Length: 107
Image 1 (tube, rainbow, N blue to C red):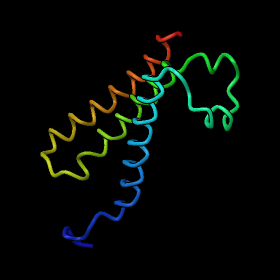
Image 2: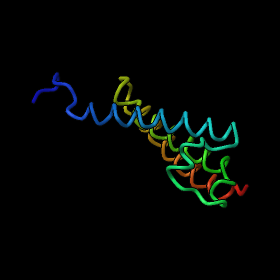
Image 3: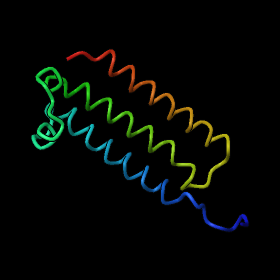
């Protein structure tokens, strides 16, 4: 294996980016519309307490999706290692913010 060979984990990284985009889009949709999609409620069998918290769940999912996307940026865009470390710190802050949002936001 040489330095010019492609990254063997590029498929996994691409799956993480697609999952992060889906999580971000779904979380923003739920938080803004303030309701879960009907099909998702049926599949997950949310109880009344879970159905009453769409902003909390949507914000949590959107922040986690954003963290996943920010974490993968250095693997797709060439950048200095200091910038990559800063983006990793931002991804960690987004994960902590997601946990804080979920605990702080009570609908």
